[in-house]
Length: 98
Image (tube, rainbow, N blue to C red; front, side, top):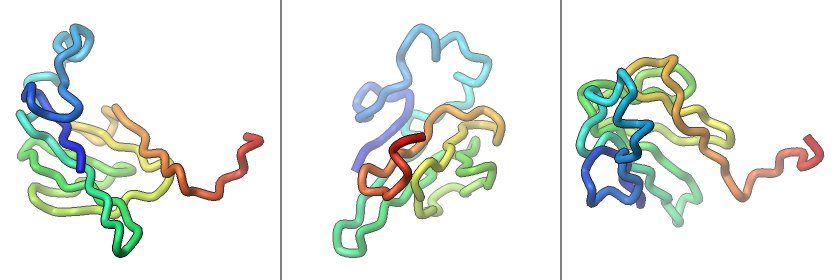
């Protein structure tokens, strides 16, 4: 389980100078979202913890809701076009020659 947000205790803290100067920075929550691996079901989930919006492939997840992440899923914060992460599944069987 990994947490993402402005709080210093997040696994991935949004504290770089570049992020702090983004016009979206005020919309980032202390703990904006987390990524959870369910080893029993062999799935990875994103759980939205923000009132300001977390989007996966342009779809708003909604606070406290979860969304299964698939390989190359685009994660956006605050607006659906503000893409900041791409989830890469190390177990995916994508063509490695691309």
